[in-house]
Amino acid sequence: MRLILLGAPGAGKGTQANYIKEKFAIPQISTGDMLRAAVKAGTPLGLEAKAIMDAGGLVRDDIIIGLVKERIAEADCANGFLFDGFPRTTPQAEAMKEAGVNIDYVVEIDVPDANIIDRMSGRRVHLSSGRTYHVKYNPPKAEGRDDLTGEELVQRDDDKEETVKKRLAVYHEQTEVLVGFYSKMAASGDATAPKYVKVDGTQAVETVRDNVFAALDA
Image (cartoon, rainbow, N blue to C red; front, side, top):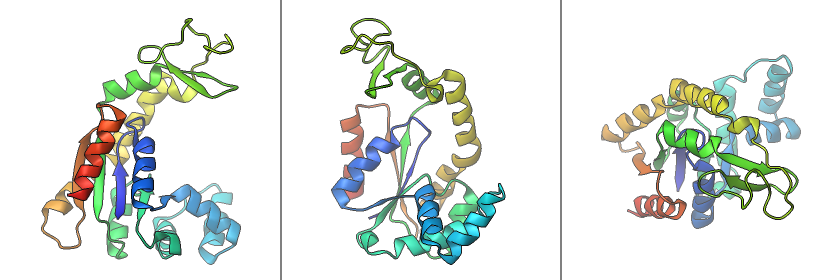
């Protein structure tokens, strides 16, 4: 099971990724983890990436694709893998295809921006314990206070409405084009093209999970 998960920040990809990993016994691969591992191991690609990062540059797509090919050749990827946050752009998706990295399914968790802003901007956190609340969906017993300690809850910077809107704008500008890229590829009749699955992410977490599993088992 070789998968790409697509969806805006806050759409619930992380939660669904955990369910998918457990069900299919596959690793979740992020480019950040790959880069850190390659740099730490001192591989040729890792050293090249480190030199670029140390100079404040962005690691080139050809290096990222090289790292991807090395990573998916490792033993824990024998049953497949789940890409997390990769590819981010159409050139990366095209480079991956040209490199012969085949994907079985592209799963899009679809949630409208208004829902994501509502979900994320309403989050409140008790910092010392990590307990999370939501002003609308999971409010604390006393407004702005942790249920167990009575200490103040905070809104993390990442959850502030303006920050969420900026992250969504970047997603729409850079990554949402992959929806069209993979939809078109799936409809092309190409035998190596992945199947494209779109799941309504506004439903309960368990319902989204069941819908994803049903699509992958089809």
